[in-house]
Image 1: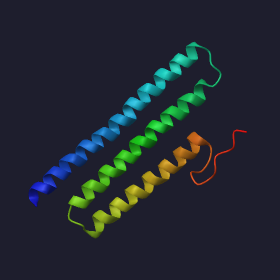
Image 2 (image 1 turned 90 degrees about the horizontal axis):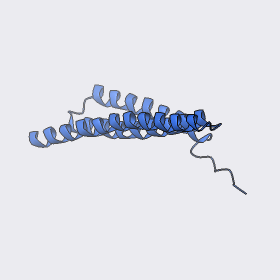
Image 3 (image 1 turned 45 degrees about the horizontal axis):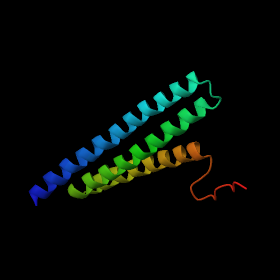
Image 4 (image 1 turned 30 degrees about the vertical axis):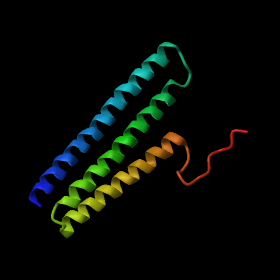
Length: 116
């Protein structure tokens, strides 16, 4: 059982690193797209920057939540660790929701505006 804990902890560290790299490379990609659109003098450069950056942060947060859940499942389930995980998931879910509203301009449960 100790080997399983070691490997799952190792895997959760890798998933955390993937989440951080997702946010980092998403930010770099967003800035490159922004700089390209600024040089072409597009009117909505700032909006494109906010949307692409928001999407990468959203994806990175989802990956980090998965890593936290994996790390907590392996650890000894104490009330303190479960409470901390709950708070982390709650905060990151709130951040994800507010980022999604910022990027898409609507709540996830709202219907998309018709394009007709």
